[in-house]
Length: 251
Ligand code: CA
Image 1 (cartoon, rainbow, N blue to C red):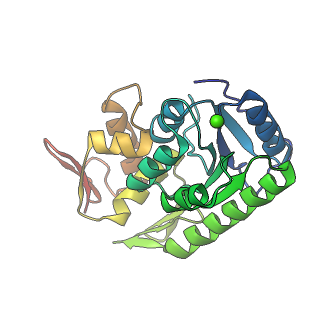
Image 2: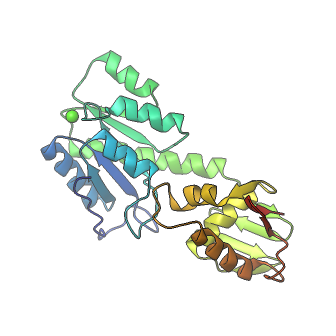
């Protein structure tokens, strides 16, 4: 992987944490200009210079100590290892809904159409101005947020547990419970599919990322903490049940 800049911007582009943008571009000058322009807007920017590293960033373990997923990709088409169109195609096949803004020197109608067909959300032809780039990025992030809000139910409820995904709130038997981010995401996964059995490996993949260095004991530890916060009797869990030899299940 090339330079990763996780500098904290002065002015967050949105409320809460700054949006994370992955810039995938092999031309150094363009990459740096794009990264700077986005940072100036308050986004947190990471850069890679080829498609293979981009895929690793997007499907694998994120930078150490930072498990937030990216919110947007600015993606060049002509790239070493895996080109931008193939990368788009792979991400969409994996069901990854992340907004993608494709950059390309190819101005022909065919390439534009191809980019959108493989799942890019918008398209910018080189050379482009940084103000236009920023405007497109903003629009994509805004649209993604609206889609997410429309698609996410306001509350998941399961036998005395209410989880409000948009507010990161959990109420258990009428009382507000404070969960750490990993605990919240575990519970969110469980309440979305009650009675589904999750193996430790599946939970590791979903919550920690594929390349997580560590073992499935991590899952057990977080499950224990979660139980202490939501179960009536954590030593005899009613909600998060252990299925011996398989993993865990809600209910
Ligand atoms: Ca290129």
